[in-house]
Length: 77
Figure (spheres, rainbow, N blue to C red):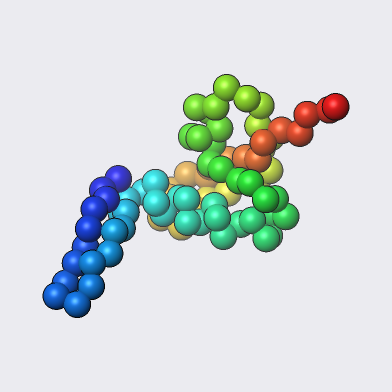
């Protein structure tokens, strides 16, 4: 991932580029379709110490292989 200021004479903008940004943007677009308030890709789920539930498994634009889409696991009170 690359990030930094992209600027011109009229405007300065901070932006990020790369596969991580692409995946994050596409996962964000799935909130409504999957009816989940929190979603994240399997790479993030694997880094967590808490439990996650796989909600979907799909190929995202720009990727060759499908990835898991996860949400936090609900705890019983």
